[in-house]
Length: 370
Ligand SMILES: NC(=O)c1ccc[n+]([C@@H]2O[C@H](COP(=O)([O-])OP(=O)(O)OC[C@H]3O[C@@H](n4cnc5c(N)ncnc54)[C@H](OP(=O)(O)O)[C@@H]3O)[C@@H](O)[C@H]2O)c1
Image 1 (tube, rainbow, N blue to C red):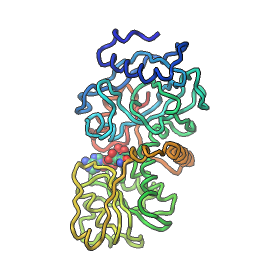
Image 2 (cartoon, protein in one colour):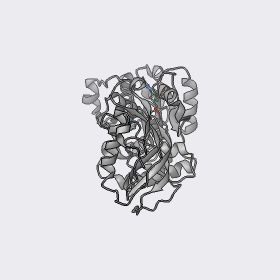
Image 3 (tube, rainbow, N blue to C red):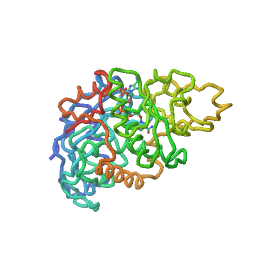
Image 4 (cartoon, protein in one colour):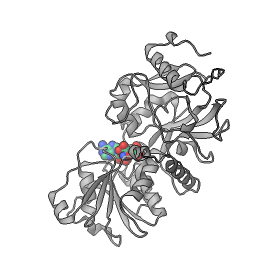
């Protein structure tokens, strides 16, 4: 039996009550199946993640009739996860006792008695569309949340396939019709989204012009991106010239650019774009605004657009999302999609968080292994 909630610390009592209320819709009177006790990374208030996040014990949760209990295997720390904890992301889990994380992969641990989805114990599943609370060792959610994924790829890929690779895939399709032989330009090219853009574009025969920031290790980063298929990689300082297009050689001038940095790095995208080109902003890593010279509107007729995966997924795209995830994991399996990650045991969450927040310099994507 689960311990009575009055025995829990206040924050976990609320967590316990929230879970009991969401699950009661699915419980059967006879059900007495419970998840194992869990550990979760929780926060009761918004603020600097290193101050407000803590690892807490979570009591067993009842597995209702159509619920699935999943033992988490791995979950990443994405920039948006950090923004949610800080309280600056527009959609966030309710406080207190919010559990961090938004995507990840786990293994089916127990099935409620009325589950109809074709799931078996041990299957790998991801929440799809992603949902709050993946930084915990066991999760109980309705069967409709879970999407079974292939288990013949490294678990870190299954854990990270949704937020960043799917963003890259959508942005290549949703704004400008691209044909084989075209080129696109992007900044933040070392990010997971950036690495995926390079490889997904290459699958379609599209060239990529990539901008990275000047930092220790930028020459090595350039080589790595070229190995992934990048046509050109420039540091921002290399583009401090009047005619950046003269650097393109035989590459066509791009009609589409992706900006996840802002500030000067966004201005460099605009410099590369051709007449009537479109810049899509999907992130703001430098925390600096995008400023556009008036002349770009008048003489180049530039369009500025934005992309937010969460909005795209909310618009009735759950099934499409799953089809694309299967496609992306297929590319991973074929060796056509890879990106740098560092897997860190759950016990070292604080170190992973510091690395994800840039406190140890540039680091690969941090993936927590449970
Ligand atoms: N709109 C959406 O739906 C959506 C979806 C997914 C991701 N995103 C956004 O996409 C961006 C990339 O996400 P990710 O998870 O792929 O990134 P990531 O793998 O965690 O990598 C972080 C990236 O940000 C760069 N960076 C970090 N601090 C920076 C700074 N102060 N100035 C300039 N660049 C900096 C890093 O460059 P170095 O290699 O030089 O350290 C690296 O390229 C984020 O802004 C994220 O929020 C948006």
